[in-house]
Image 1 (tube, rainbow, N blue to C red):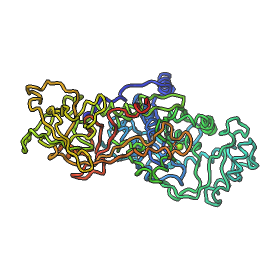
Image 2: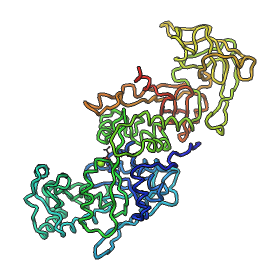
Image 3: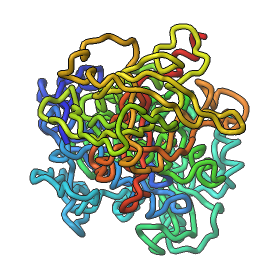
Image 4: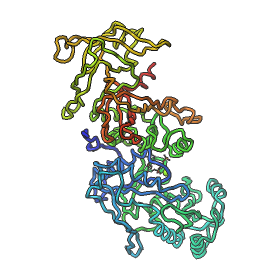
Length: 599
Ligand code: ATP
Ligand code: MG
């Protein structure tokens, strides 16, 4: 596949990259280390792609490392299916670009215990992936990082916090705790002794208490203006098996406690997340500082998440579409998931180009899906092989050609890529054209085929419509035309001008393909702005037709991309079988929605 210049070879600039550059310049950091920390409770979506491109992009541009870490602290919502899909999606998106910057963990390795400045420290030294990981399949050979691999260390840190008098076991119910925190009221258990706290916390771990009966809370400031500092929960009891640690634990650390410590253990320098975590940052810093950790602490930076028009983005809503069978699965080509977008035919290059285009800011906004579509068209225009295919065929008989007429015509594979060369396409007396390209009663400025009118067949002759054949119901079933036999390239009348050129395929040589015409999943720009987002589903988001295609499409390759001339870009779907291609419309050549909106 020709590989258009990678947009991500450019070095963008934004406030986070400025901070990173400054940290290197001043010597505050010498090795840049970022991470992408998805929770394996659903498939990754295009918002995650923005975060992946930012975190891996920074590692790539500053010669650093980026860890892929499963943020798996909630056993009841997570699943290995999601872990696997995340690996596949991240690998696909960074392959051939930032895969050399992927942090690798030697198999089975756990954090090292270090004594530094009289304190126990845990550290999992990063290993950059210098030899490129296998490019053939989408499997990553080495394990990603798991927050759950640090449960032992995180537990040790919790014990230390208790020892320091900075955490206590609280016996209030979750509801009471919420109410007390909202009202800035101290827990009646706040002043338990260190010894009692240690005893209770160890017994929580040993499984002595049921879910919800006790929690471990940080002892910070019950009246803090920032509610996250009002003695937040850092551990809770959950008698549930975990997809990665099995039955080993019945207490699990809360996100805020596990995240900063995982960052610290992995030696992360810049912990980049979305704006909703800005209010958690004081807690992130408090925990790391309270423990008096000896190594340089990671810092958290926040950027605006991606919101995309005509799209819902939250995993919860995407999950609903899947479980209620409103789409065929997480990888339905209409889904904004990375796996859906990939199946639709979008390339990783196009997705990275989009991520680099939209930039990184501190202000929430709505990105027009047309920006994404622009990146997709731009990429596919450069790489797609041009092919002739007719989606809704009507037969044309060229009456002045002999019954057995056969010739092969030269067609250009890709005008954007001279190296792609030409191919032969068969031409004969009976062809199919697009039903839309004929009008019995043409509207004004209709330059395609009409009774008595002329049109050029792409790469072939000018034809004239002499007669319309209809069935008993009055439908046009055949057009009888004559061809100007001198009008082909090189012929006497080849330079004769007619206003329209249309595509076609030879009837006897065409192959059938199932073509899935995908469109936007929602009909309104902000489906989750109010009301039930599912009421805005586009009833025409998928239309399936049997297309007549030029014979070369029998060998369509899943790695390649195709442009059906005058129509759209297509990619082979994994549902294809030998002799039975299934093609997905990735995107139309022009933006029909923009026209709709202007009307
Ligand atoms: P959602 O809100 O869609 O359910 P999430 O935030 O729960 O997603 P995580 O798995 O926790 O999903 O996200 C992993 C990383 O991706 C986090 O650092 C998060 O900030 C980032 N991320 C999630 N959604 C977006 C988005 N729309 N734009 C940019 N980054 C995102
Ligand atoms: Mg989350």
